[in-house]
Image (tube, rainbow, N blue to C red):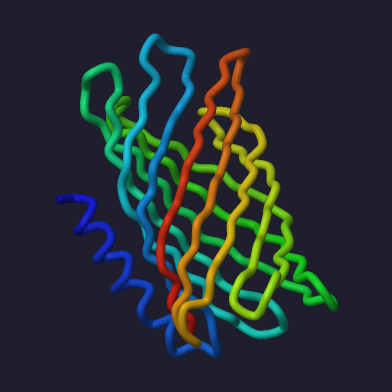
Length: 195
């Protein structure tokens, strides 16, 4: 129930972005699988929302919130992630190059706390056909108390109408701190509304 309330609150908070020059609003299902070196690594599923609003001069405001229920050694828990940032896009003939800077907040309910940090990413998007596009990003993620490392994301979108697309994404995060590794794989499946 908390996930539904969180998603609704995020959608209402991001709704004013539709008054901007352009952008998009995504709603998606997520599946997470973690590797924490334990006998039983947690996995789970949930939902999320993401928005992008063009500010002008190839710069966009971005926001993401996702929440998933996890099964951690038989205990129910939740993993929440919120990102707010800026994105720069530069269109070339066949590809659009992007750079992003984000503030990141991650909360894991089972350990009773969270962590703040930042992410820096570069990527590119290619329009394969008029209806199909593919994109990839690579970045550095620093969560001050948990650790730092790399994250990779690859995805594709299919244009269903002029304003609606479906998308599928895979993200892999590998963070280490003091010799301990934390890996998180996330699959997102959702719909994107272009305004």
